[in-house]
Amino acid sequence: MTMDDSCGYSDRYEDALRLAARVHRDQLRKGSDVPYITHPLHVSLILLRHGFSTDVAIAGLLHDVVEDQGYSLARIAEQFGTHVAEIVGALTERKTDEEGNKRPWETRKREGLEHLQTASLETVAVKAADTLHNVRCIAL
Figure 1 (cartoon, rainbow, N blue to C red):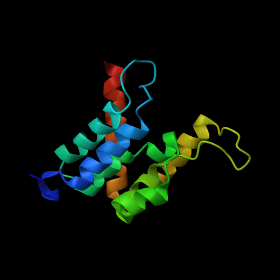
Figure 2 (figure 1 turned 180 degrees about the vertical axis):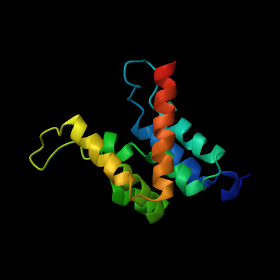
Figure 3 (figure 1 turned 30 degrees about the vertical axis):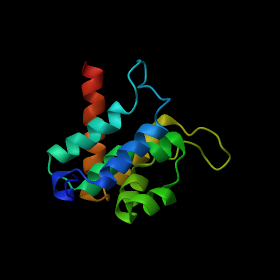
């Protein structure tokens, strides 16, 4: 039995969860032996608990797959729709410059904060849930 999107669960949500688990399977949380997938899952659950749509919860699951794992934003759009891809794309940090050199952390974070000033509420919500889960992990 499949629940509908209003419950936060759908076949699309399960597909996104499987994709996130697959692309992050060899990744651990920084400085720990905790599987990375726990992070996007928590981000997604925070969003669902606060009443955001399944699309936003899926974006929460996938928010790091492009930036950290090189997954194609076009494939996200194809698999989960342009709305999800727009949110993920808005949150994807450009870590290297045109020559392939690593860009400074401070520059990347400043650009991210500047972008949030004009981003959609849903994009800001995913970033807030991401930050909340990171802070909770640091506090633990």
